[in-house]
Amino acid sequence: MIQRIQTVYLFLAFVFSGVLPFVFPLWKDAAGKDFYFMLDLTFAAIFGLCTTLAIVSIFSYKKRQNQFVMNRLNIILNFILLGLFVYRLLSLSGETTVSEKGVGMFLPIVSIVLLVLANKAIKKDEDLVKSVDRLR
Image (cartoon, rainbow, N blue to C red; front, side):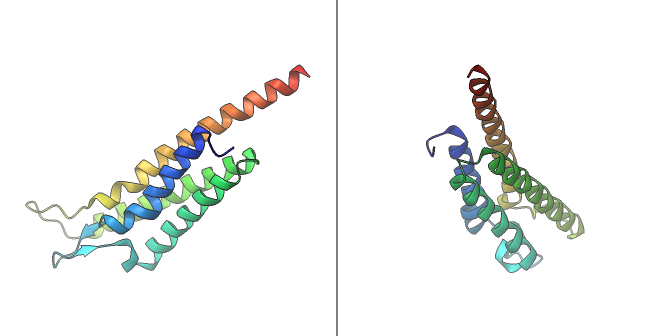
């Protein structure tokens, strides 16, 4: 059913991985220009995979186990993306007066939290179905 709470969490994860990266820059480069995820093919590919997995997971609500696995894979991809951001941030030259980090670097963290909440709700639904099957 589309109206479950995990669908809301998955939709918000889709927004944080598919819509907001177009709005918020990841960081500023040495010239002071905003760096968006589209400028690097690796970031674009991983954001695209995360977005696709969230959408596919929303519409596979009848197969809760597949939905659970897709969300775990999405969490792993978001951790990889976060690791790439941290690596890139540590390899950038830093200044004490200007912060080079953008809001876009924290989008995978919010997406991970939403995916964990969705998995928790999916597990709760699965346990409920198993308990009803035991009573028959």
